[in-house]
Length: 74
Image (cartoon, rainbow, N blue to C red; front, side, top):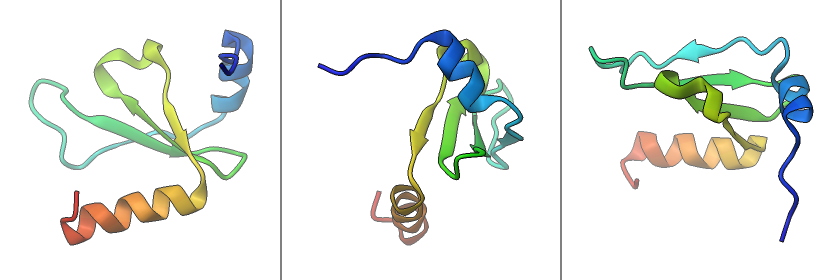
């Protein structure tokens, strides 16, 4: 079992991140936000509930995800 990062670690990880809302945002704020972190990792969070934190992905994981979305395989 892995330890969950503390809130201080999470805050430091996302400090200075420039979040961008999806261009596919819905009327009811039903969308996600994306940021590239200082570490080079990519982060995704729910616009409606930012306090829940974000999922982070390495560069290769992010590229594979975006490719799969673009080619319709997911």
